[in-house]
Length: 324
Image (cartoon, rainbow, N blue to C red; front, side, top):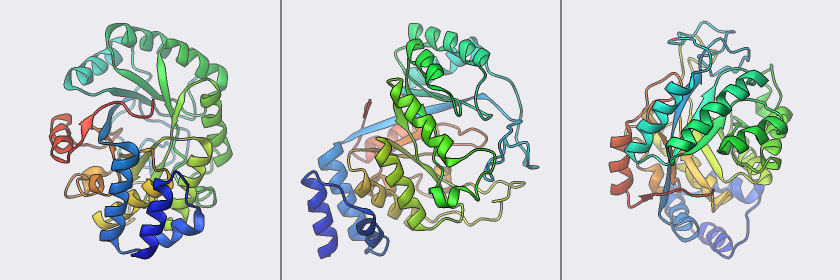
């Protein structure tokens, strides 16, 4: 297809495509689109696969009303449990377990709008212990923190901060009302000012359009994001999105491909909901995706690291750190 070839060559020359060009990809033949995205991935990003795991470091009773989340106190979802910030022993045990399996990144994720100053100090002590006793990279998702808090976390050994945009600025207003898109953007900017790399993507299947997905990734690109989580909505009973239709494998592959066209050198990371795909994401890894969250998610089961390591190897990738 002439359009695909033109856009692919433009990217391989080191240029970026714009919004209108990306929108044209939404209707491109899927087979040709995914093949072109995979070629861009190989030539720009190589065969490295950035694998990470997460631990639910503080669970439940969240003050925010994000409509997709089982941990929100606003809904009647069956969140499996609720507990305060985990202590050093439990966080360290998770880090050691994942490091021994060959995972290179370990992300601590907490519920709530943001950690308190006391909680930040507590988890900084835990992270210093993790960095002393393991070689695993530590990433965090602690909500809408300040630049000062991020500086403390960096000094403790954190290398990356995660804060999902979730969707486009336009669509986000219907997803959550207890914090704003602007607060998310400022959080990512504050983390970057503190010298941390940033990770930000969204959830597909909230009811948004492909235009919303493209706008979300363009915003991430403007912020300098190089790790883009691609979550697929797992419609959880008791949340407002419980009746949403999950994305098909083909839709997921198209999104992975379009995201690769938009940020050619990124880690396009399959995240929550990957287990809903019959092939565990294998087709997406041939469509431009080159990273994943392995193991269990926050409140839902995931795919084991052992299974993922085999899938990664069989797909022609090598597990390695990518993009800082």
